[in-house]
Image 1 (cartoon, rainbow, N blue to C red):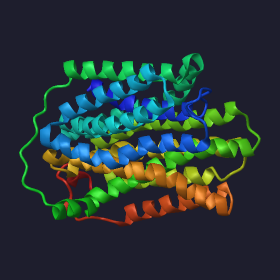
Image 2: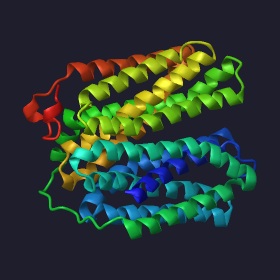
Image 3: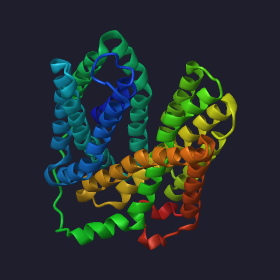
Amino acid sequence: MWPLYAAGFTTAFGAHGIAASLGSDTGDAVTSLLVLGGLLALYDGAEVLLKPVFGTLADRIGARPVLLGGLVAFAAASALYAIADSPGWLWAARLGQGAAASAFSPSASALVARLNPAAKHGRAFGTYGFYKSIGYTLGPLLGGVLVWAGGLRLLFTVLAVLGAAVAVWAVVAVPVVAPLPKSRQTVLDLARRLVDPVFLAPTAALAAATAALSVGVGFLPVSGRVAGLGAVATGAAVSVLAGCAAVVQPQAGRALDAGRLTVRSGLAAGLCVTAAGLACAMLPGLSGILIGAALIGAGTGLITPLGFAALAASTPQERLGQTMGAAELGRELGDAGGPLLVAAVASLATLTYGFGVLAAVIGVGAVVAVVHRRPASELPQTEQGNVN
């Protein structure tokens, strides 16, 4: 399992480490805000388009080769800019990194599910999410240090070495998991499965969590600056958010496996806590920012392992890659949609109202999660004992 956790760390560290460092680059690679926006969108756009594709490929040929291919491609794309050191090649490298992450991220999630019994899915996905959160936390910090010490080339060099090392580790330690035989699936069958509440509910919760996380990381520092707070205070708020998410995820997974928490109640509670965090972010001053960050982190940390465990429990093992890829697509849409919604509202009113609108949207989702009840006979076998 450790190479899979390392793969989760790699994709998170690479995404946030570079994204946070591009704007501070003092060379000629990032020449304007338009160029910066394009480079940021390139990575996310590749993930949105390709994660479902690579997830389906993992079901067809096995998740392990897709995982290894993605890690090798990530290392190669990172090395491309480290060697070429040209603004044009930065675009190619960033696109290559996004495409590679689209391959090894859903494959790693599928292998986490395949290599663990259903009774331990909560703990496994909680631990996997913990290491991804560590990557999100350390990415901006270590990325900034590396860019300060040696520019973007040094950061890309470190990512190339990290991707290659994790690939070698996975070759040695990750067992071969053969693809399972599966019945023929039509496009209509896939569409029905993707709109089924068993898939849609946890995926929507994951998208909401990612939206809140992205908004917290992006806009809480803006609130801090408006309140006259310094960079240290606003940076601490982001660290509190990521740290709470990292701490809560393993605990939530263990509680699910032990039967102390159900998927429905856990997702509803996570959405409520997340909405409360966004509401607290509306309060002026450092206290509102820190309390909001802590609650957003705790709420998203509660949702993430439960959402993925629910998807793994409700999906035939031969379709795990496809399901994880589609769920990752939902998260990417939340990652983009949350900041866009808040920014749109803030442009018409203020950032405070932006936080409030997203809090209301997620709060409605919590109410729906509480009200909606499926008959026990329709739930996956692993959940029927914990339906109430």
